[in-house]
Length: 331
Image (cartoon, rainbow, N blue to C red):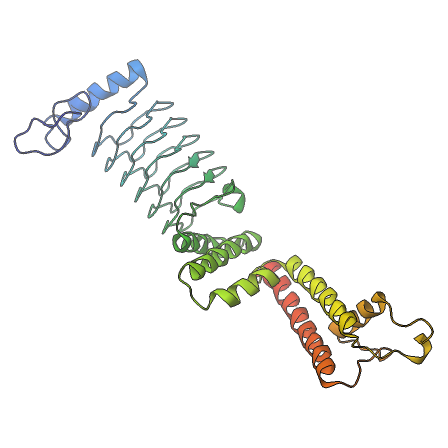
């Protein structure tokens, strides 16, 4: 790239020109020249077009890989099926643009205006769209993968679901705090659109990265966050409550067996207690049924242990009801 030949100008010159956009005297003539080039080659690959003003450009299927359009105004442009891999779209105005099936892989889209854009089946992978505006954008079939999604404006955006985000890292997870905030904004978007199952997914991811942030900062809040994550998935995974409850019942039954907590009823004196008796006792204690056919020995430590399981059971049953209601009903 060459410097703009205008005296004292520090900008680079536009591709196919000796001047930057600011110092291009006949801007219409430059747009016509660029348009003619595109009609011939259908490519602006690697072009430097920073601050270009080309409203309603008709660039369908164009090869714009690694093009620099930072600060450009392409409002209302038609870029259907364009290749914009690695493009610099920092601060670019793509409001009302047709971006259907555009490949934005590795693109830099910081503070990009995508409001009211039609983005059907666009691919946004390994891209940075932090602080971009997706208000009222039509995102049917859009694929997000490993994107920086910090402070993205999603007001009235259409057709975003949890399945729009794919891969092991649907949102860039380099920074635990920024990832947590990104999932929080998605959670709020899903809740406002009545997508409660999707909001549950986003809420779990938010809390999970919040836990990682607590661990990184050595905060005491890490411990309760870890416990709640294991027990119930931060209130979003009822299956974890069931698995945790079964594990606790098995653990208590093992403790009862090792310590010999239970009294042997007269009717079982001929064979003694088996491991299944301890499991049975643990279940009826955990669920607070307590038939009374099996009882702990009158030793304070054993009574406290049995009481602790009963308390844990009540807590876990309440947690299960809360988690189930939170996941499948309005919040």
